Image (cartoon, rainbow, N blue to C red; front, side):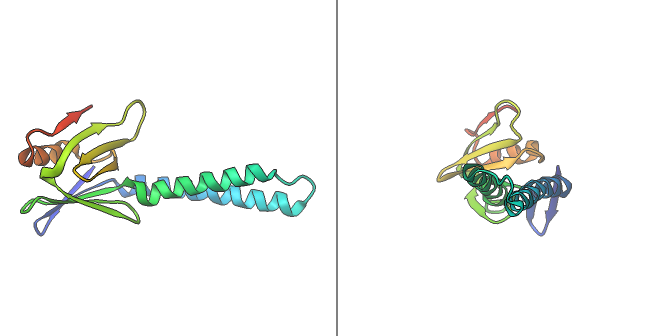
Length: 149
């Protein structure tokens, strides 16, 4: 829930400890699973079925895709012109504050907030200072739809 204001830009970012725990957890699951699959295959007495290996590899790919390109961990705002960047670990999406049409908290036990804007959607991990970000969006677009806050 950190907000950093520096040189005319405002950064909202998920605490690095949360990001670290998520990445390390995914790496452990993937690494232990791969080592286990190789060990069982090399032992040769009872190798895992092919469908299980394929399912594990596909599941690992989905997890890493989500971590690297789907969920943003940082929002950067330039208040002077309203430019916004939603930054993932390996990708970023860009828009303007005035183009944001809806901000909604995920349903149920979701840990993500959905930010809809003209031209796309960004999913951001919820551990940010959303009140400040929402107030900045409302300054540029009073009609923004906000749900769940």
